Amino acid sequence: MKRVLSIAIAGLFAGSAHSADLMQAYRDALENDAQFASARAASEAGRERKAQGLSGLLPQIGASAGTQYNDTSRDLPLPEISGRYNSNNWGVQLTQPIFRLQNWYQYREGELAATVAELQAQSARQDLIVRVATAYFDQLNAAETLASIEAQKAANLQQLELAKKSFEVGTTTVTDVHEAQSRYDLTVAREAAAQADLIVKRQALQQVTGKDQGALAPLRDGVRFDQPQPNDMSQWATTAAQGNLTAQQAQLAAEIADREVSSARSGHLPTADVVAKYGYNHSGALADIIATEAKTSGGSIGVQINVPIFAGGYTQSKVREAVALREKARSDLEYARRSATLGAQQAFLGVSSGIAQVAGYEAALISSKSAVESNKLGYQVGVRINIDVLNAETQYYETFRQLARARYDTAIAQLRLKSAAGSLSEEDLKTINALLDPAAAGRPIVVPATNPQPLVEPGKAEPKKTEAAPATKKAETAAKPAKKK
Image 1 (spheres, rainbow, N blue to C red):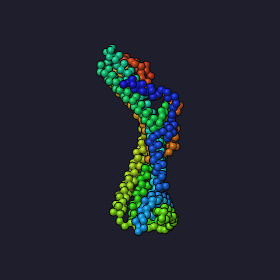
Image 2 (cartoon, rainbow, N blue to C red; image 1 turned 90 degrees about the horizontal axis):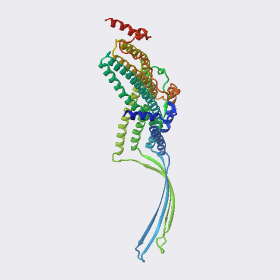
Image 3 (spheres, helix red, strand yellow; image 1 turned 60 degrees about the vertical axis):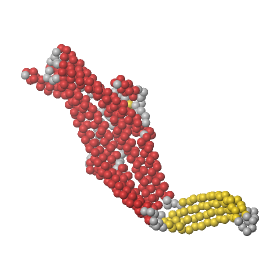
Image 4 (tube, one colour; image 1 turned 90 degrees about the vertical axis):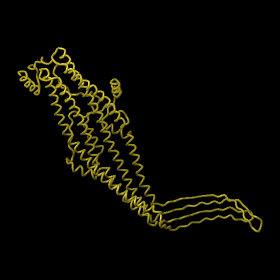
């Protein structure tokens, strides 16, 4: 299984001579993402609702034509007369609505539906920005996770070899060997899972963009994120309640539902149309004895009024249905506003807490590195045991992974905050893209080393000759009274 994953990882990077940044991935997604293409087509279809509503207010023109074959016979006092002939006719009719209130409401609904379609197109574009950024940073994070686990495996292997050597000479117990072996085996298993996860994340980005992006530009070292402006969660929540695109669509849907109620009630009202007709009719002769061939043509124009009296309860039922749907639309609007508010609050906290987490993990990474060095020196002078070193190394690499994840989550949270407020645009994506380092695309990911002390068996170190960091000197100071005891 490990060999299969290694081959798959090598295949992913083989032939990827080009590199991509966030904007390039977004441009590819605009052209190739199936979900965005579907939303764009749905938006184009929705825009036609306005034209469909307008058609109910404009003249309706129709034409008809027909022909009949006739076979006729008559019994008369004189000899019987029979004949066969054709009758032909055609006509044109124009109907111009004068008073059809229901059609007017449908036209207004069509205008609102077209506006909803425009908002759906904007929402689909914002969603694409977030999805591309998420897939992009997920792949980068998976690559950094794999690199840190590989570095951790190498460190655990070094500690395992030292434990075995120390056990052979009798300076440690077999427990140290078992602990080191267990930690190494666990890291090997995590490495296999990280390799598989990197493959999945790369395929997820390819699904959105429609092509292999090759080597990705990572975030610059020591990148810093700005606090949201304005730096007030309540202002973002208020803005999201009104500006969120989903909430705006729900607002328009509620207005459409109001007009639908009025449209259903107008079914009780009379309608008036101007009707103009023109027709032509031709009938052939009945027989040779009696000529009945006739050609007639004529036109008419007038006003036609229809008054609905009873439709079996259909109109009343449509009104009740429209009223119920209006209540549903109002509830959907309230839910959309609350969801937008909550989304903005979560995204704001994601940005602000993410910035604090990045700073905290950066400090923790330095402390964890010092802890590894101190525990290794303490192990060599005999005041620390093997499990202490292993735990310190695990904490160090776990902190490295948490720092990487916090950076990517903060970048995505900034985009989600703008999306929740309804103001996310390509300019915001360019701002995030400016934090990347294109020159580092394709370079091996380097996990900062812990600068371990040379491999020395426990009890054989010479701490006086070692230039130790402040944390290491503290370990030496703590080691001296331990030896006197």
